[in-house]
Amino acid sequence: MSATNKSAGRTAGQAVRRPAEQNPGQGAGQGSEQDAARPGVSRRRLLGTAGAAGAAGLVVGGGAGAAVAAGTRDEPTALTTVGSAHIPFEGTRQAGIVQPAQARGHLAAFDLVTGADRRAAAALLRRWSDAVREMTAAGRPATPAAYDDQVADDAGPSSLTVTFGFGRSFFGRTGLTSKLPAALAPLPDFPSDRLDPKRSNGDLWVQIGADDALVAFHALRVLQKAASGTATVRWQMNGFNRTPGVTDRPRTPRNLMGQIDGTNNPKPSDPDFDKRIFVPATGSPDWMAGGSYAVVRRIRMLLDTWDHLSVAEQERVVGRRKSDGAPLSGGVETTPVQLDKINPDRSLAIAGDAHIRLAAPASNSGAAMLRRAFSYHDGIGTDGTPDAGLLFVAWQADPLTGFVPVQRKLDGADGLSRFLRHETSGLFAVPGGAGKGEYVGQRLLES
Image (cartoon, rainbow, N blue to C red; front, top):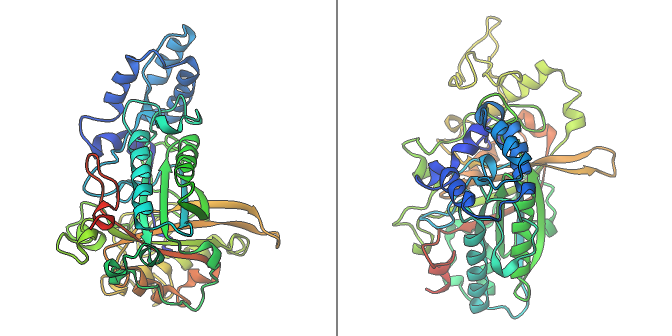
């Protein structure tokens, strides 16, 4: 986990812009026009939209007032703001990697049932891909015709993304061991890990994100039903981030420790971003070209212990001010960290065991990951403390040069590690995206 740069922040402004960023000409504007022409936009749908518009505040401006006025006349209106945001399913790369993490998320692993072979797995991936293609389409309710349970009725796609990956065990189960990537080697044991094997790994992995809780839940249910007879859920975890529109301007989000989280995450505009995050077109194996590797960790935060520290002590552990995320070496949140800065009393401005020092690429021979996480809270444990923390997802072209060296540095030496517990782990090969009429993993399963 990186308390300073784990996950890309997602805010109201980014949520509204997301469709245009992914596919110019599609998204909020196009979806609204299509929905306005459809008679099925109900008053119930309108009022939900008006609520979202009111929450979005400065981002949507006077749109909320116009929506409420139309609603009082019970007239059809266009779906606006959050619900209309559309991220295309088809593309060279799968959605849900470079896009900012949404307000709601589900991570789940599936195991193939006894007797399910390569052909059955291919049929499942086709069913899943076809369903997601429908659920993420612009300008329509997020409900595929084959699974019309009405859970997501009245909602647009709400930035829904579904990302699929393969675990190491999948290749043996389907007779594809010759296609097993070297980068999918088991992660090493880290001394401080307390992993639950029942909630780790899996044949297939699914990451779901959406800016509406019902849309995200519905997508999970659709995939579970489509898997019936072929695969069963091994484990499933639920997460959340900030809801679009709750901040006055685009801001880096905070984690459950109250720390601003995501400042130094790699950005797609970085010149070496693709090299660090995605498998090159000439990479091995060829079916992974354009794909990435996801390390998934459920990291429990020992919040009661953390909260006993003073703010100054918490800032020393992390290396940043809690109020605004600025590094203790000086400046504002986005000011580059000066690891060699010395205080007037000759102490290091960034402590030797501070998290941002040990997690920095400069401290790890340039190793970096794209952290895209969700917070979680699963109630109060038997010991009376919150079962809460981070569903950590780290993306990289090769985990052996990304996650592994950084976690080795952090494990035990990081001052923040005293307040964390890694409880589950998984590594998954996430292939490139699907083209029109294709399914995710087709190059592997039909090779």
